[in-house]
Every structure is written in C-alpha cells, then in structure tokens.
Amino acid sequence: MFPEITVTELAEKLNSDEKFILLDVRELEELEHARITDSRLEVTPMSRLANEGPAALPESVKSGGIPVYVMCHHGSRSMQVTGWLIQQGYKLVINVSGGIDAYARRVDPSVGSY
Image (cartoon, rainbow, N blue to C red; front, side, top):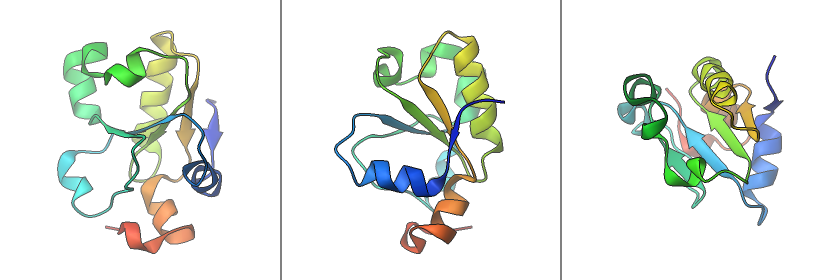
C-alpha cells in the first residue's frame, strides 16, 4: 500500500498556500472533459512515462523536496505511477484516492466529469 490522500484533503491543500505538485497522469484528451485549474498542476500522461521513463517527468517533480500528489481518473493509474515514482527513489509521493472523478463528485462538480 502506498501513501494516499482523499479528494477532500486535496481540496484543502489546493485552498492553501502549501507548496506541492499535483501531477495529473491522465491522457491529454481526458483533460478536455475534466480538469483542476491550479498553478501547482503538472500534466504528464502515464503513457508518456511508460515510453520515456523518468526523463518525461516535469522538472518540478525531478527537483524533489516538495510533495507530489498523483491524480488520474479513478485512482488506479495514479496508484501505479505513485509506486513507480517511489521505486525511482522519490520520497514525497502520494496518491489521490478516487481521482478527478471523486473530486468532481465530492468537492467541485465544475471541474467536469466523464
């Protein structure tokens, strides 16, 4: 089991000044249907990570030192990426349980759903 936060906890963090990265690993076409708008958001599809490995990670993730919350549609892909990042040696990596679908249902329907 990997570290996780709920979408409610993520919403609290998004409403704070806390430094972190929200890494969305969904495919680009999925972002057209549902997306969180925040300056801490980075998008790197899981397929790109699978093809390019750590080189595909945004510089903000590579530099380390601040938490990385990993999100996808329902939480399965983000859990895989969380585990992979931990295997790569990243320490502050946390899965967002339920993904953007749960975020839209429980926190903010305006982000969209599909």
